[in-house]
View 1 (cartoon, rainbow, N blue to C red):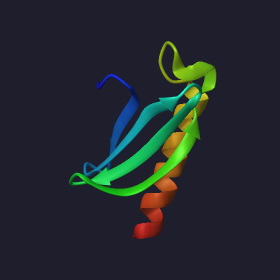
View 2 (tube, rainbow, N blue to C red):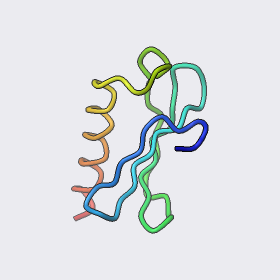
View 3 (tube, rainbow, N blue to C red):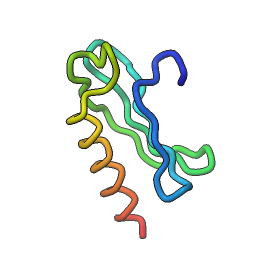
View 4 (cartoon, one colour):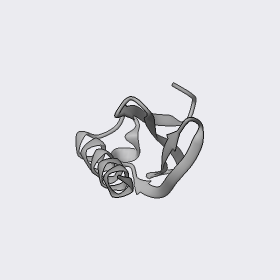
Length: 73
């Protein structure tokens, strides 16, 4: 994981979802395919993700990614 990276996952074996810390308690969620950014948005980081991402945050990020990807199909 890169220095400011809080969480990363791969969906459908081709979309990479990454949350990167941008400021205290705030991150940027990016969805990429083959290195191209398809979507990004600001997301909150519970407890500043000091010891890793909060389970509720991860659930929310997964929902954002799934909703976006499903809308493309």
